[in-house]
Every structure is written in structure tokens, then in C-alpha cells.
Length: 239
Length: 225
Image (cartoon, rainbow over all chains, first blue to last red):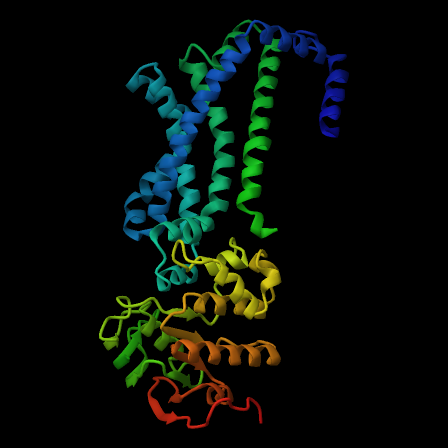
């Protein structure tokens, strides 16, 4: 809370030294935020962006976790796919986005695909690390007591991967947010990224900041309402 | 009955071409209900022998049969490893319940935790237990299913002497009641003589049986001195 007040104070002071067009005062941004919320537009675009984030995040996590575990567990798969993985990790996000739009058209499918491809390799790397670090001694316990495959998976195997899963989810969400905006800016006609592009053309800094704040509030809410409680629940045994 | 016929058990070695031979020409049978202690110096293959009997390790020259079947075919054994190997994300009770069949009575878990003196710790995570307490949880996990075959790898090592003696008496009691077959690895000869119907002595590596001794002392035996 103190940091928020600090930022606001510095902002207010800075406003005195620059032109109002370049850095509008906090109350102007708040007014803009209320205005954009009032006509329902802001909520619509934030909602659209949120849906894109959720779909591509879920896809990237699902495929990334599966492939990561396979690569961490089976050396042949790791050897076969490692080269492609390094390539995918180093491809600039912009190149992936542009190619997706060129190949699949300026549609929803291309947008989601571009975000998913950007995020996916990082999940794979993270989960591969996790799968490699799995404690063989504990797996032997499940083997000798002949636990059902369900128990083996949910009570012995996966809990060892939860820390990796959580860190993938957290860093993943942060990355997906950023890339979704770029994807929207470049090729969609709705969403926060699209709106920011419009305000950019009109040099409307107050609206840009208003949208950014609305967006930050949603991201923080997801972090503290969803991810932090989930993390606490999954790692309660460590404390 | 367990029939053990090992002509050799070797491990591949890193950076060296030749294999390391851990057990050689180990042939013996264990009768059902027999309490059998394996004694030997470090590296004589005691733990390897347990891993072979449990079916965790299937890679050997020779054969191991439990009631005529391969180790992984018949009844599930109880195994207490040298380290406790508890799941850190499960509480004490959950760790023990983990190996029970679905729908099995969980009341027994609480009774057993009481027997090993951990009833106050049932809902605690292993992180908060001392080493000795963790071993007791591991012991409870090994015996909760009342297995016909119990494999114990130095179960009372580093335990408080009085707790260890208490647990030894309980173990004998449980095993006699259920006529459990026990293979108990230790390097403490006194412990072996206190517990076992029969003590097998392994030589240093590669382990061979150097002495097969039946203990004819009536129970209850006097633990010390």
C-alpha cells in the first residue's frame, strides 16, 4: 500500500514539470477510467483479452506440461526434440505472431496459436527440469507397495512437480498477458491491445494509462485471488 | 516359502567396463512364518537382497520365488527401507493410509499409530518429525496391510534404545500373531539374536552366506546383556 501511495506522490509531483499531454495528472487518468468503464467499452475489451489469455494459457500449459514430463522422463524423446525446443525458445515473439497471421489469416485461431507457441517452450523446459528431479526413492515406494496408477500419479508423482507447475503458471501468465496485447495490436479488432493501438494513434495518454490500470487490476486480482491461494494449498506441507 | 537361488548379482559401474559383483552363490530357503535376520558388514549386499526379494530389482542371475511365484506376482510385501521415504506432502496418517486398499478400515491406522506412539502426530507433516519418529511412521506403513512377508532394512537404527526395544517387542508380537515371514537386515548381532528364529551371516563383498544359524533360545528373550 505504501508503495502505491509513493508512486502516486511521485507521479503528482512529476506532472508539475512536464506538459499535461505527455503525463496527465492522476485524477485525469481516474476520470478517463471512469468514463471508459461507464460506456461499457473497457469492460468488453478487458473481457475479450481475458478470454484470449485464458485459452492460450490453458493450451500452452496442457501441451507444455505433457511434453515436458515426457522429455524429462524418456531420454530418446529428449534427444529427438531438444533441438526444436532450443529453436522455439529463441524465436522472437514478433516473428511467431507475424508468421501465424500470414499463414492462418488475421483471425482468432492465428492469434491464440501465436500466443500459445510463444509460451509453450518455456513450460516444456520448466517441466522437463521437474520431471528430471523426481525422487526415484519415492517412486520405488509406490512400486513396492503396488499402488494404483491413480495414487501413483496424484499422491506420489505429481506432488513432486507442483513447485515447477506453479512457477510455470506464474511466469506463464505474465508472459501470456504481454504477448496477447501485441497480438491484438497487430491483428485483432477488439481487446485491450487493439484499444491501446487506437489511443496511440490519437496520442491519448490518459486513456492509455486508464486501460493499463484496469488491466493491472485484473492481473493482480488473478495473482492474489487465484494463484497465491492455490500455491498455499499445494505447498502447505513445506511450512 | 521363499526360495532364493542367486548365482550372481552385479551392478554396472560408471567409467569402468567390469561389473561390480555384490552377491555370489547365495542359495537358501525361508519357511513361511520364519523370522530371518541377515547380518553382514557394509557392502555385503544385504539391501540388494531385500530389493531382489521385494521385486524392485529383477536383474539377477538366478531366481527368486515366493510360494512358487515371481516376487511381483504374489501378495504385496511390507517393506521398510533404510531411509524412511515418507511422502513429504502427506501427513503421518495419510502416509500410512496411502498403502491401504481403497475402502479398507482407516480405524486401524489410528490404532497402529497409537501402538508406535505417534497418535498425537497423526495430522503432522513429516518435516516436523524427528528422524526416529519418521522411522516409526515408515514401520507403521510397512505393517499396516498385515502383509504375509515383511522386509525390514535396519529398521531400528539410530532410534532411542528404549523406543527401539519397545518396537522390537511389538514387532515380535505382531509377527507371531500373524505368523508373518520376516527378512530383517541388520549389522547388530545382538539385535539379530534377540529377534530371529534364524540368522544368516553374509561375508564382505561379494556377499556369500558364511553361516546359517538357528537361534534356539525360547521367547521371550532378554534384550540386553
